[in-house]
Length: 111
Image (cartoon, rainbow, N blue to C red; front, side, top):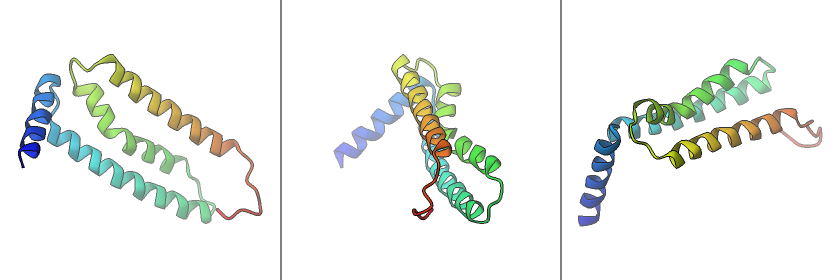
């Protein structure tokens, strides 16, 4: 139980140090993952119906990045490596999506 109290105090002290509300950040993180999975499900449904996907992909990307955008916009004194990590995560994710979109599908493989 002491570990949980120490962890809670550590998270609160980090929030105060960087002027970020840990409760808002945690809520945004949880909500963003639920929204992201929902948009992916909607995207798969539209893929099978051969409907446009651009809006859904954009909404999924925005929902995925909500907590990170909050951290970048509201946070103060955030270390440079955190900004670098977030940028690397977005670049890598964009590259993977670009690679999947530009590869020719194999007709023998199911979607």
